[in-house]
Length: 562
Image (cartoon, rainbow, N blue to C red):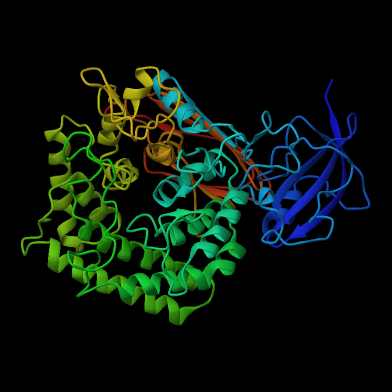
């Protein structure tokens, strides 16, 4: 029989709202956390809950209107926990309510109670390719329940948890955030994560490589850049302008510090006097099992300054800070200029011959427009040299399939993605993996297991491919100009022999669905849009359709060579 709970009260604690629930059958207490900034929009698609009102809610599952609740913690007694009864803010409340440390006061049976950030699955993707379906599921299954007998602080970071004392590595967070925001509700997690960034940030703007912080030194390119890139991903996914506004000053201080470390338009060059970063972590273009990549750290550092400055310029313009936007664009221009002087030959050829180098240069428009076709051709040659297998690490991998698709070779994006032998996304899946691995070579048939000192089989960084899968295979993507899926971009791009695919998303506005199939010489697309939303759908024949809320069926002729 389904258990229910009564909503007894709610308390706004800073930028989170805490809902205090009482299980009717046992008198146990549960807490749900909802981002205050999103609550009204989320609740609007369900009956509003008011404090004087007691509604029956399922106890065994989170309320449908809660973006990111906390799994109910077992506790004794009917009184609200100390701190919440007094209306204390999240920062001054006990640490367990910050989803950071093990619960001592609530969980009396400390050896048995697990603390997790409950992330309700928002999506589904399916097609006839068995391993693709398992790859999507593996990207979602990177999560571990940590029992609070651990001697370390506990954080379940998005879809993964780490052996490094519960910290959240920034690089994994920033590359995976767009995927996480599609397949799970992560708004509350990143709301709390952004506060951790504020806590960890130094007075001069410097940021570490993880939060909660274990050092005060710079995290390096691709790591500390998460300060800007993760909030932007949450804005695109949820339309969360308050998150950008609340942390704007901190983002500005970080970029100003980063820009101050450039010399002649370069960052992280030799002799710079500060941490040069982790390179393209765990790429395969260096020695076997090396953590360092062949892409120079000055290349990566300069590229990331340009990328983050451009994103922060967009954020500044969105918030009405036009002078700041112009200043950040000048920082980007300085970095692009230094990049081209140092790493691009007069002929336009990149001086760094790695897949990651070409992907960053192309993805972030670091090259003059006339030099991009040759750079893309060289990228294809580098892939062909490896028999259409990747050699990228944490920072380069999320760019691979999107760049191939953007520059007109979605067929090759499928070719690389669908490789079932080492190295590639489907290699672990084919060998029985149910979660993403930290290394491409965490295990190989000829060499067995990798270095046991750092060889996680439960790490979500390479699961960032999920965003491309949803955008391209399913054809369902957000529109940054009208974020939060207020307007969707629906552009399915069949390839790899796949003849049908579908996806669904529990957006803030309601359920969005796309489903396409190829039947002989016809391409058929079905779309479902919730109330008060629109979409632009593009079919393989180049026709576009402006769609409003409701169900739509579209079709075009399918050419076999597509």
